Length: 183
Image (tube, rainbow, N blue to C red; front, side):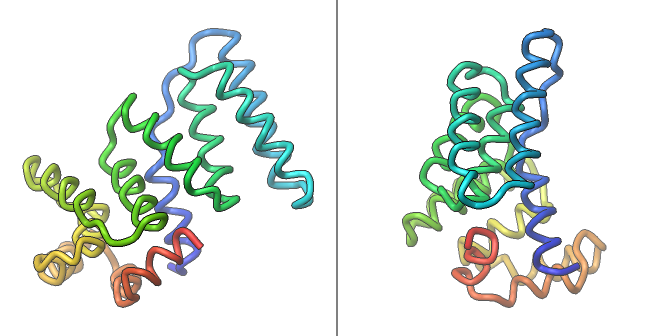
């Protein structure tokens, strides 16, 4: 698994689960947002800000539509607009908490303003309370420089939860790891 695949997998996991869409208007609006994402992928860089502005308008007009907000968040991350992406992610996490989403929030905070491990420590406490140990937990331990990281990494390797190649990404410095995810 290459780092790019790891990054793609990470982002696909952190995006909060899509809500069921039942309203016909919402369906059309979500389809319009999806079309904007497709356009973004295919367009030249010079046109991308206009697409992001259109997506922002859709979010503003449909603040409860999680699907549209997730698509907007993805575009903001792709454009390295981390402050705005963090704001959108905080809205999503407030609406429906998801530990992987919270991990991403912590990582964005660290990317924007390095040096405060409290976000990761709080997240680790949630994982510990629920006795949940997955790759996101391992990443939180890594980012918090938690002394349990190495033992947990070895346990996840031996349990087959992560591969050797995935574990090798943790040999990067915290800063390099973070900059691989959020250049």
